[in-house]
Image (cartoon, rainbow, N blue to C red; front, side, top):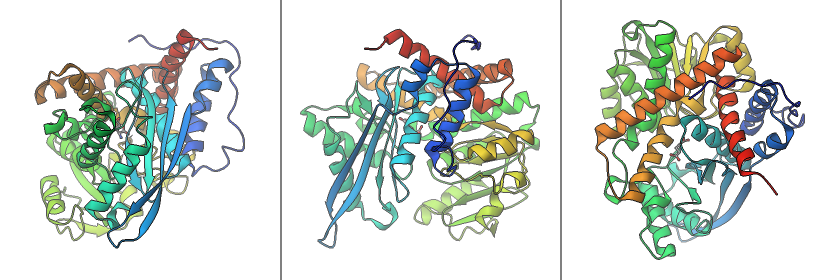
Length: 435
Ligand code: GLU
């Protein structure tokens, strides 16, 4: 893919000043970066107006009969940011923090992520405001099915394709696929990705995001002349993305010295056995609580540990103007979406820290989602090796494209990623035309 050149044309508009006052709001944080990218590429207003707003916001109320016999009403969202490049794609998260602002930001990030990964999708995101840790399996199933029914005219193989995200996995995707298939009257595996293998899931999908995070880090390390064997990593978050990133770091000779999840943060300067940590989680309700092979430290301390690589793989806004100056890592690879605030970016850029931005670093997941969707449509299934080889190649290609745009325009990788993505999305919008 050719390097994106910036042409000097009409002036791009700036973000709404009311929007950029509150940096803790992920949508505002996203808009600040988008604005910067639009400005440096002199994106014409006609296109920018389209890109900066979501094309559709759906909000639903989901009354669910809880196990105690009482009805509880949950709020659910689906935001379709763009369908310029194809049907919209993006996960569904279950979390108490889910709100419209968060889902809007996450949906826009999916648009840019898919553009960078060069997969033919637009971007969307969904979420339900709930605390799955306090809910039974039956309650979660009813909630997932109710959400699916209420979104059944939104979702579709060629319309909008959900996937797992924070606190959702192949289990929820199987319920979603089953419920949608019932409503649709035919077996429709291609309506959702991240399904169990038995129901049309893809080999390699579970590992895809973490694997891609590691591949992206290894590419940056090559550029930075860092030897994996002499490199330490700290990983925040030990869910699907964090644990698998840590596993791949370890497999590539990197010493993982710090890990954490919502129950605790752990540090061992000699290195933590990720195999042991994963085994511990399997026996302990999926948590690191009580992990003995490392010293327990505080959550803020974890991010500020002495390390070369920091991989935030949890939620948004973990690295902010409050702690950015104390971050010691020289390479940050964002497994999570939006872990670094716009203000923190400025501080880290000044310190010379290289940040592989979320919309590049965690794109391995949606890339393999695309492979899953292709397999569902053709009915021909690839081996794990085929999926992994393809995914690695796509990630390396995406990394090199973003790196080249950043170098060409003398901007940090995040801005390079936004410029690159915006260039592709803008081309599609122009080519499709408007009313
Ligand atoms: N939830 C993942 C993400 O944020 C995967 C999305 C997908 O596969 O559609 O990238």
